[in-house]
Image 1 (cartoon, rainbow, N blue to C red):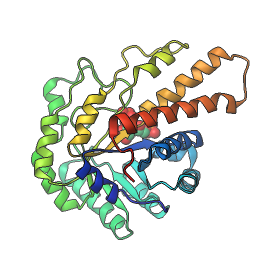
Image 2: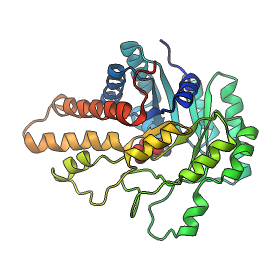
Image 3: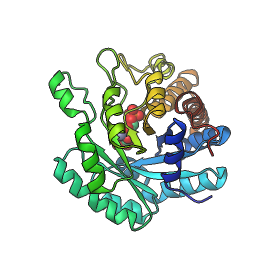
Length: 309
Ligand code: G3H
Ligand code: 13P
Ligand code: ZN
């Protein structure tokens, strides 16, 4: 099984009312934990790489790790650039074997976003690679953002048809209230499902992407806090909201922070219990096992992508 694009995955996910997990990777243990979990529950996968991850591990190492995971598991895996912010980084990933790229032009004006995104789409499509665009800005966590400013950041459904038609993107990330990291909501978690509904009416059968979708699972935050960490107020997207989004037009759900928390919680706990150990294999084994457990839980209980190959 070669590395695949997300086209077929999204088509089936849309029709089946489930979502594909897009998990961020930056080292071997994370790649193995995720792919071993997906193998056990027979799920397709997107492994995504940020610019920071690419800088940390190098493109070639990540590509080879993912190729090894494909060979080892025989799963359909799509390799995706997360938050590409320029034509150059998208081109470099396409030339280097990725099957999907995100061009995140959300910080630009509508017209500039279209122009940049279309340039990436033209290059990618000519090489069989798919493209995710973004409209709207993910919520910030700054205290001084007031409600009307916050509203202005959400995706405007009136813009989506023009954006998709003029750029030719294959999927669209929208802002409905999620944010990146482990501190997502100041009070009660709230997502604008009305915007998602309106977007999907205007873009029938079109895959929507949800960024900032970690649940910040309390078990792992508690593990961190119980072992010398300090993360008061950490809060993520409730799992029932993710299940609802997956049953609607959301076909790709991005998860990074939950992996970080599971890995870090495990390593903190290990050192607390074994202060004299210093062999990385000893503390990375339970960390990898925790990632595997987390990803299985996500696939089976949240995304619904198990047994969909
Ligand atoms: O959306 C951002 C991802 O969590 C990647 O984060 O840029 O720190 O690798 P990073
Ligand atoms: P989280 O920080 O919620 O895991 O979001 C990850 C993400 O959106 C990667 O693009
Ligand atoms: Zn993101």
